Length: 370
Image (cartoon, rainbow, N blue to C red; front, top):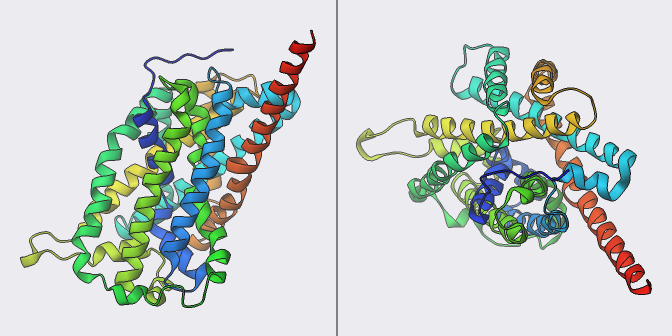
């Protein structure tokens, strides 16, 4: 079935959406995760390399969706892999996005409890988060995308402002010497930084909603390029300000970096609270789109209306979000999702793209013979 949405989105809209989708929980933890994996201050190189890897994978994801510009990814899987294998792939992606929703709901609640509402029970924060997400997701995909585009400029403004306001605390010596231990630590750390860019594969669900699907590959590369610039800049500034040794000891190094901001004469205090509010909005928009994809995928597998399915999924998300006993267990979910994302954002799309190319080539040869 061909799906046509109006109004269509421009290439710039999609680039902004991809950048917003990628910038999420990882922006608070990436410097620590990278330093733990690499062990040196060269983590900014790994972050840059991880972004380049994501751009390559994103390009292939876009190319796959461009082969079938009238369909979203779930429909494409059934066209290429058949009903049963396609349904299995839909289930895999639905579960992936389900647990991504669980992870985001739990982590945002942990962050809010730690920095904003320390007296509020964590289950209350999660329930409010889920109900707000349910309200938005029931409105369909277009309000979700528009919300992304609304918050994106504000998010970018805040992220770049924290780097500019903290420049006086930055020490280039904390990043030197470069490549002191060679390339080996960076190669080992690439597996830790690349999953921080997960989420770009949603281009496969956006191409059919674009004004010009032919611009999908360019849009995803631009969006990931912007996210890579932000991640690399934040990593550089955090490590250059706090040192690699200190970053390894901090749960939320980016937040500690923001706390370093001081205004002359105490003109403005607790800038980190303002940053935290913007971060929560960013996480919320990412959560809502993942929630939508879960419900969309499952609606193709079970005979339940989309809105009813979204309502039924909400208590399930809450139940799973409350399973982790502590923050470390919640982080372990994110780590496992990072590994699974290699399959969902690279391996499966590339295999389907090769299958699509092979089928079209075989059909072309048959047409010539007839």
